[in-house]
Amino acid sequence: MSTLAELLADNTGLPGEAVDHLQLVVAEWQLLADLSFADFLMWVPVAGGDGDFVCVAQVRPTTGPTAHVEDVVGTRFTPEEHPQLSRAARELRLCREEEPHWYNDLPMRREAIPVRFGDRAVAVLSRDTNLASPRVPSPLEIAYLGSAADLCQMLADGTYPSPDGGTDVHTSPRVGDGLIRVDQHGTVVFASPNGQSVYHRMGYESDLIGARLAPLTRSLIRDPFDATEISHRILDAIAGKPSTRAEAESRRGAVALFRALPLRPAGRPAGALVLARDVTEVKRRDRALMSKDATIREIHHRVKNNLQTVAALLRLQSRRTPSGEARQALTESVRRVSSIAMVHEALSMSVDEKVDLDKLFDNVLPMVGEVATAEAHVKLSRSGSFGVVAADIATPLVMVVAELVQNAVEHAFEPGKAGEVEIAVDRSAGRLDIAIRDDGRGLPPGFSLERADGLGLQIARTLVESELRGSLSLRGGSDGGTEATLRVPLNRRG
Image (spheres, rainbow, N blue to C red):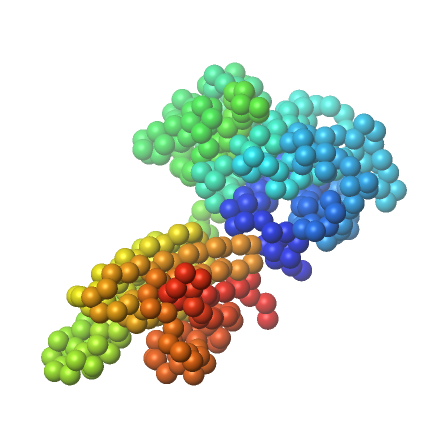
């Protein structure tokens, strides 16, 4: 089955930032489904589809019956078939069907919730509730639905989910683990049975209702620094600031995970949700996994050290070589080995085998710029964001971009002439487009990338075709100079 990123790339022209926001919504929306006792479907307008919407993701509740037994992803609706979708996207507000309708012999109520990003809706969520099993209103259901309503309004406002809330939602507590709602003063107004149990394991035997949650939690945690941190996160959420998950051990030895979410529908302070989970037993297994992750990171660290040793030896050899041509070749080899070493250094600090290319290129590009001769004054600049990529893409991509930049710095400008090399990056759902432009003298007559005998271009072309499965082209710029265009697919298939 295609991933969300692939479906967005195939059906829309959304920019990378909007795709990242939708990915964050999908990472968070199990919480919405569980609080709503309803299925959530993500619909996006089809590019050139005359107002049609296509479903690109779905999630079912763990707290109630599903409204969609079948897989709905890929289904396409016209505006006439589901008018609430286009209304919600156009008016940037929640739109609900006046009357329930029948779907596959099940009574269902649908509600459309715009996903706002900036000043427009980039998608619409359909909240579909199965009405076949009547529910008796209870304090738990009322609290869940009220919290869901606040979060859905924040989706329409564009304030939820927040990118500052972290990327750890998959390991954060869920609704079924334990949910506590506090008002704008920090007083508990609702606590689910599992939420009560978490605090009982931590050593609090009384009812949570009416308690001031932040100071109470602080008093139960053993480490004073952890106690202060979690207390502040609860207070920050009440003040409207998103927070990431936090883990702490109680004075009784129980380990709990916490996550606080601010509630500010339509900009109105409405307290916060605190999710809590008892992870005392899970923590024991985590220690074994952490040991394995530490071993992998140590391997990357040692590879980085070995590569740095190789680079140092090559640098030493270049200083002792009388031939200028050989010295230049050794200097370029030092740069290439050092680039690979930087990738392994980034992996040695990562636990998920991913690399932040923006930070990496901030270190690599100045090193590439040093190949310019003393007479040349070349300015390097970068626009756009590479983002985070998998490790198997990072090394060849860094090598290719470094080779293309060095090729421009070395060959684009007349001796003694100043110039500029710009790296422009455009990341979308399915690919990474990189353009390296210079304002130099342009390509020589009859130039062909396939027949180019320069080592740097040969390395770049080979890596693009064999490792990145992308495309590379060189052409004259519209205002002179040269432009190298690199296109790399981010979603590997087969």
